[in-house]
Structure formats: C-alpha cells, structure tokens
Image (cartoon, rainbow, N blue to C red; front, side, top):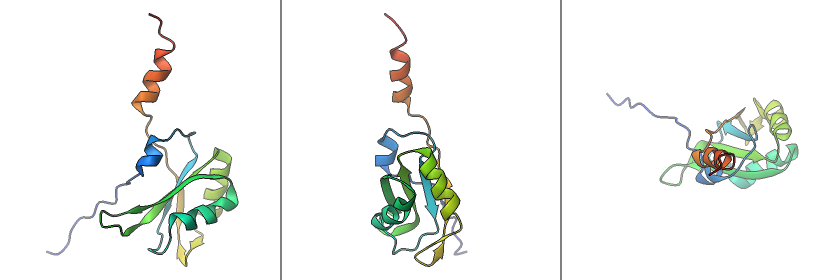
Length: 119
C-alpha cells in the first residue's frame, strides 16, 4: 500500500479568520518553498500595496506547508498582486496567487441585523 491520501485543505490562520476584512483583499500564495517566511511575503507583496497581514501555513510540527496568505488594505492592491505574481517566482519556485473568499462570520451578521430590529 504505502499510498496515503493527503488532505490539502486550506488552513486559514486564526488571526485572519478573526479579523475584519474587506472582501477580495486576501490572497493565497501556493507552491512556496520551505525557506519563505511571512516577513518575505510582506516584503515581496508590499510592492503592490499596504500589507495588513501576512502568514505562512505551518504543520503541527512547525514545518512550512507550501502556502501562505497576504491581506491587503484594499481590493485594488490585491488585484494587482494577483495579476502580477500569479505564475511568478518566489525563492526560485513558480507560485500560484489567487483570491480567497472567507465565509461571512455569524457574529457580523447578527450585529448588522440587531441594529435594524427594534425592541
């Protein structure tokens, strides 16, 4: 046997999930080498606009998993990064860069509806 199915499901950093964000401001970078850190991502993607957050996904053993996330201040900056960097190189590796849309948090739904419902 020896063949084991690997789940490549997205593990979105908790600080990004908890943060308020404008839709379309978070991009995922795939196929990163193990040498790329969040500092590198912030530096590289900072050429396209203000980076609010950057992170690299790590396994439970602290080993980089080959993808990371960058959150920009606004969508136009994120669009420029996706257009410029998708298929580009980071640390000698051709990377994929795409938008990631996060699910709407329930607490943001309840806070927006509670202000419109009187008592």
